[in-house]
Image 1 (cartoon, rainbow, N blue to C red):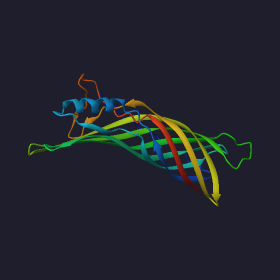
Image 2 (cartoon, rainbow, N blue to C red; image 1 turned 90 degrees about the vertical axis):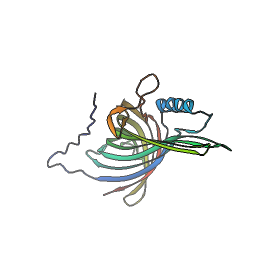
Image 3 (tube, rainbow, N blue to C red; image 1 turned 135 degrees about the vertical axis):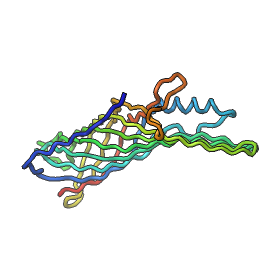
Image 4 (cartoon, helix red, strand yellow; image 1 turned 180 degrees about the vertical axis):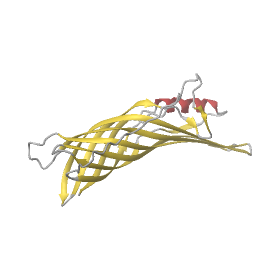
Amino acid sequence: MKHIFLIVVIIFPGYGFAQLHASFSTGFAGFDMQDMKAHQLELKAQFPIDVKIMESFPAFWFYELSLTGEVTDRVSIGGAIGFMSTGGQMDYRDYSGEIKCKQLTRAWTAAARCDVLLNANTHTKWPVYFTGKLGTAIGRYDLEIFSELNNERDTDNVKFQSANLFIEPGVMIAKRIVGPLSANLSAGFNLNVIKGKQKLVDNNELFLQDNSRNKVSLDWSGYRLAAGLSVAF
């Protein structure tokens, strides 16, 4: 069964935004990745020697660009694109040779965004917003295994791709720096509500499964903490 995720942007004829805001933010993101952690343990068990897990899909940096326009004094709508990554790594080395297993996962995101000013009537210099996003995460999983044991060398590289649907509620606090330039801090939680199959890049009829023949999904759900700069024009 194939899932197609679409983000629909509606442009109202004859309507102009009161003000536009372009922003860039970066921060730290945590990821659920329970399927991938279990997948890593299954890979570990298949090696002829006891490889060591060096990394297991830890929190990592993410980046986002957004453009929003004010539709009322309190509400802004627009869109955002972003990038995030994490991964796993296993390693073994001794006098007989070495084994390296790299599991690189990354995703490009595209989302519709809505910001709502929560303290509009207080005339504060620190406006607080509720932020909401609905979007897709186009994921990529690259599995690379290198081994050199007893003078025998082997390299395997397999690539998978997937598409998830997510929602991301959060809060943001902003502070004007000078002129149209503002700084902001935000915190939110990303929830992947639909997790697509990881299909083999070379053959979309095949997808990643565990030893029990259950699909192995990328789950980008987790906290989001970020700082950014915004320009109004």
